[in-house]
Structures are given as structure tokens and as C-alpha cells.
Image 1 (cartoon, rainbow, N blue to C red):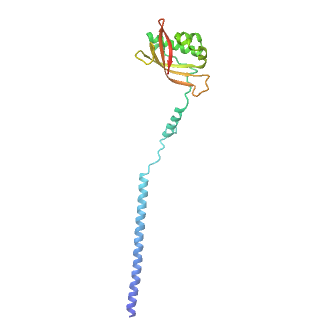
Image 2: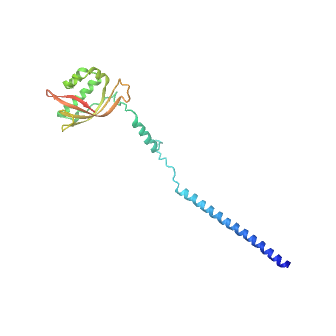
Image 3: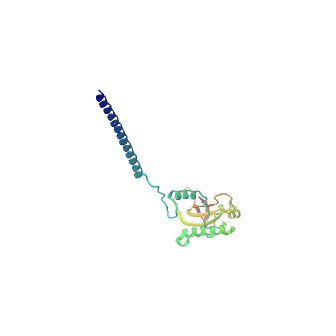
Length: 204
């Protein structure tokens, strides 16, 4: 009887030990699997992670910085660039009526810069200069750049004998507003009076 009891006791102990070992192995396998999954996830993350691309330019600024800077510059008021070095229309590029008109525009610009009332009035139509306070006008505006004259003789919304579009820079020396300088295309309405071209009006 004691032998049978001892046998069952030993058998039970062995089963318990083997069971523990089996659970331990299962836990080890589970831990190993979890470790492998974690490592795989890390590896996948390392593969798919994109490096930070600063896209550095030669001046050390990224493209984002440069776009931001350009955007800021575009918001800044225009500043006159030709105050100390006025640029006139190149008369050598024109002939005939176009040359006469270009000379007239250059004469107008020079009279504005020098505030010469008589010469300025001489380039305007009679109706125009009679309606203009010339002396005050010449003190308040300066034209410092003219280029790229383009002539229009076809149908137009404006009444004139010819229209001339020019790139123009002008500024208001006595203005406290910002901006006080402008650059763009101005359209001059030209008329013939007594066989000579005269400036009637300017449109922006």
C-alpha cells in the first residue's frame, strides 16, 4: 500500500513539474513572438520613415523660407528706383509719328523733373493745361522712368487720335502715404492740334 501511494505521489509531482515547464516554454515562446513582432515593427518604421528634407539652397535658406520671403517682399510698398538716374524712352527705336510722340513724352518727363511750367504746358492740349494747376502739379509728382512705348490706332474705349502705352515709374515726393511710388503701364491719349501731337490725358 505504501508503495502504491509513493508511486502516485511521485507521478503527481512529475506531472506538476512538467506542466510548469510547459507553461514556462509557452510563455517563452509568447515573449519571443512578441519580441519578434516588436522588432519587425521597429524595422518597418525605420524603413518607412522619411528623412527630414530641409531642401537647403545655396544661401542657406530652405524653399519654404524662400517662398515666405518672396511673399513678404511682394507685400512691401514699391519704392522708386530711378530718382537719381531717370530713364527716358529710347528715341532711336522709332520714326515718323511714333518718333514725334516719343520725343514729346520725353520732353514732358524732363519738364516735370525740372518743374518747368512753360515747357510742360507746351506738350499738353489746350483743354488739358487750362484745367490743370500746373505749378502745383509739378511740385507733387515726378516721373522718373519711361520705356517700351506701344502704339494703338484701332478702336478704343477712349477718345483720341492715338493711344500710347508706356512702362512708367512715378512718385509723389510730398506725399506721406505709403506707397508714394508706382510702377506700371500708363496710357497716354494723344491728339493732333494744328498739325502737332499733344498729350491730352493719362490713364492707368
